[in-house]
Each structure stands twice: as C-alpha cells, then as structure tokens.
Length: 502
Picture 1 (tube, helix red, strand yellow):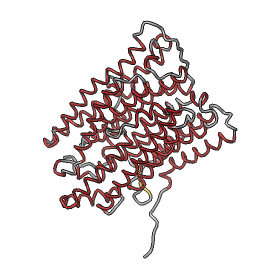
Picture 2: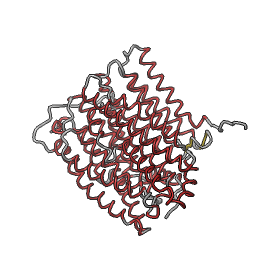
Picture 3: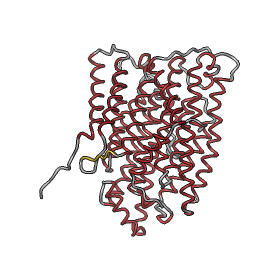
C-alpha cells in the first residue's frame, strides 16, 4: 500500500510561520543587545504583529494539508482579533517592562507572540488533534506570563493556579475528544459531523458515552473560558498576573476558547443540538452554564474593591452573554458571537490598558484609588469610563449593539421554533443581569468623576500606551455607530459553518 502525504499549501500558513520566526527573533534581539534596549524590543514585537496582519490580508482563503488547515472567514476574522488583542496588550506593557521586567523583556514579548501563533493555528484547525495542539500552544506561554513577576507572591500564585487548573482542563478536554473519536472514527471535523449524523439515528445505543463526551468537552473548554462552575481560577489569576497579561487572557485566550467550542459543537456536534437529541442536547447544558456565568459574574463583581478582580468577574459575565449567541443556531447566532468578541476586544483591552497605565504610576489596583481622577487626568478617566460603559452595553457604543445582537439571535431562534422557548428565559436573565452590571461599572465612574477632592495622581501616557487607549476609544465609538463592515464580515463567519436553519 502506497503512503501519500496530504497535499499542502504553505502559503496559507505564511502569517503563522512569519510570526513564529519573528518571536524567535525578538528573543534573540534582546539577548544580542544585552537587554539594554528598553523600548526597542516592544516596538519590534508590535511591528511583527502589524506585518503579520498585512501578510494575512494578502494570503487569502483555502485549505492545506488535506483538510487539516483551513483559512475560511472564521479563521481570518478571529486571527484579526488575536493580532489586535496582542498588539494592544504589548502596547500597554511598556510601563512594566521598564519598571519590573528589566532583564526579561524579550522573553515577555516573545512568549506573547508565541501564544498568538497558537491562537492563529487553532482558528484554522479543522481537525481535533491539531485543534488541541493549537489550544495548548496558546495556553503554555500564558502559564509563564501569568507568573512573570517571580518576586511577587501573588504572581507566582497566579501562575501555579493557572498551570494546575489549565493542565487539568486539558486532560478533561483530551479525554472528551477521545470519546468523540471513538464514536465517530474520525478526528476531522467535517467527517465527524457526517458520522455523528449517522450515529444520531442510533442515539439510544451510545447515549451515555456521548453525554459523557459532551460534558467532558464542555468542562475542558469551560475552564479556558472561565465559565461557571469552572471559573474559580480567574479572579486570582487576573489579580496576580501582570495587567497586560490579564488583558490578553480576558480577550485572546477567551476568543481562542470560543473558536474551539464553535468548531467542536456548532460544527462537529451540530446534530445533537435540540430537544430531539435529549439527553445529549448540548444546547440546554451550555444555556445553563451561560445563566450561571451571567448571575455569578455580575453579582460577585459588585462586591469587589480591586478593579482587576472586578474586571475578572465582568469577563465571566461577558462569556455568559457570548454563549447566548453560541446556542442560537440560526443565521444570527455565530454572526452575533463574532461581532460581540470583536467589540469586546476594544472595550476590555482598553479598560485593562487604562488600569495598567494607572497601576504603573500608582502601584494600586484599588477602585478607591481612582477617586477624583477626572480632574487631574481627564483623558484617562474619560477613556476608562467609555470602556466600562461599552462593557455595560450603553448606546451608542459597540458593546450595546453586541448585546443586542446576541439577544436578538436568541429571540429569533425561539420565535422560529417553539421547542426553543427556553431561550426566552436565557435572554431574560441576560437583560436582568445586564442591569446589575451597571452598578459596579458606574461605581468606578462615580469615583473618578463625582468625588469632591482631586486625585493626587497625574497620569502621563507613553506613545504606545496612548496609541492603545486611542485604538480602544475609536473602536468602540466607530463600530458602535458604523457597524456595517464588521457585521457583513460576521455574516460570512456564520456562512462558513454551513448551519442549516431550523
């Protein structure tokens, strides 16, 4: 029997290959310059991301290595988000690399680039094992980055917690994927979808194994997304990690988990969504997890006095809102998820960037430290207020349209098919908890704008930090008022999944 290698097209991988080589060059450059170039390494990392984005724009779509690597609209859209999140995270890191990371700047920026490479491979993966490898390449550099302040007990604790829980979640995910392979006989997502459609005809014979596989995969990816009850690590890790790393975790890592979830469930296990697939109906299971995320995230965030912990619980709640769109299996579902994570990138990365800038100057992450900031540092205060209002879903900012889209997708699904009336309850919980979120977002704004005394701090921006803040502000304003280009691209993301309307 003749063995033939799968056909490949390395040109499709040029963005990933280039960024990987560039990350190695960042390591090398910092070493060759004897770590004396304070800002050059950071600017080099940001330049590499911009060049990668340019290569991605001209590479185009297609598939290579058989069907394992696929550059479709979903892959290209999420690669844009990964590159944007990494760019904003690195841009907000110049403060800590000058003060706390003196001898390891190259490693810090290089690891962030390597994690981005993993995310990009993951978004193009069309096969379970390569998807898992991409997810691990995403996560392993983040283990190190979370504990990068090795003399800080909180940072070391964050790294250990993230490593232990991340390893456990990876084991659960791989165990669940092994069950899916055993049931379908294939690791390719397209073939898995076809084989699972046949298995669905004999669901009573393999029901227990399939339910176990679904629960394990939801748990494994739920840890990555910080979805309850797998969320306990997030507040401690966000608090202890360097603030730009926490920002990257909250957007880049979350977006990577969403891609993995969508590829496995929305694509591979599409036939097991709906009441007719009970007890293997993953839709209601994910809907229940989304409710927990929205309730726990928003309620517990109200009691936080540390702004990084508050944003961590906010991130948990935001994952719940995104999952409303994920379980809305109609023409609006995946499109709403894509637009949501795009708008979320600008708001959340911008908020964490503002927190990082303030922390570099003051050394404090306490919300009460922001009192009177609008009088001494109006640009920072106004920018942070806009980011928080976008996260709360206040019009005309992009966060408002993002929430509207996921809620509208769920309502449309329930209206089209009475079997999905439970989506109305999901939207109701989302609307109610969105009101709760106004309290803790508005509390920060109140401290900055309505305190009787001036803040003792005057914040000055470095050029990259200012660029990140401006990118965030322009993003939430521009794509909130003129969302059509992104919504059009998001519609292509939906089309790439080939979902059959109910």
